[in-house]
Length: 323
Image (cartoon, rainbow, N blue to C red; front, side):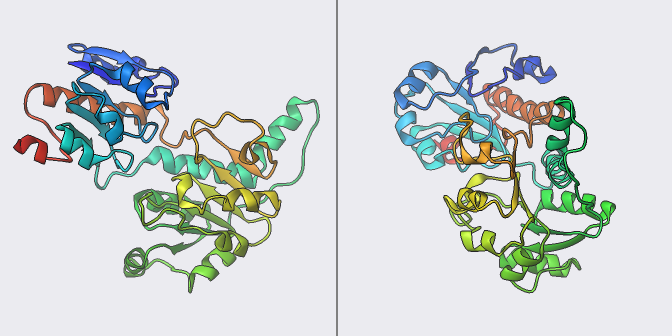
């Protein structure tokens, strides 16, 4: 099959052992990001299979209409960036292993790393000693601090385990159903949404981005956070009300550590989330480890081979098969 892989910015996939799974296919890897629909369609035609890396590119009806040869979209995990109905209408099969019950330990580890780096001022300390200076201030200890986890899911559960090991006090918030599950599991749930944001030294977001959760964290929530508290987001930028985070950052009152942005890749060094000293930004590397890539893309490439054999797996829109 003619396979196109989109948005492999670091040209990483060729280096993975699992890339050998595609040896029987005609593979093209694109290492940049194309936003123009016509230009993207020209690249991908006449490809038969498309590999997506997370939400780096949106698959719309407009794009699909320009790709009559496309038969398969292969990815892993949630697929809110793919218009599945349009795929079905176009006869394009979508395959995605949702890896139910398996958390991304890489994302959980980055969450802990961002908390530690922010709380102990590690970037500032490194910059100071490299500049020929010595200590650049005094950090804070995590033990005994309160970590507020927003979202009672798999990754948050792993982060909670790390926090327990450090000796932090963990409290939870989230949907009504999530809070009920947390209480049933004996977890501490904040008395109210306002109390959650006001009494957490660190708030970490772990919610899947859907139409229902878009903008679920508001400017009022951020304003309720205590001075010098820390907001960590390794989930999705869209969880926060548009403009609210930038506005709060400009107040220079709370700390922010974020791995995700509304527009990616974000390369404007003057952007408020990249230029302010109270923000620790990383370029969406939560799941970007050799181990995680091998795990994810082995699934994605096996889906391509299963389709080529006529026995597709992890099918999202089986209606296409019924045709």
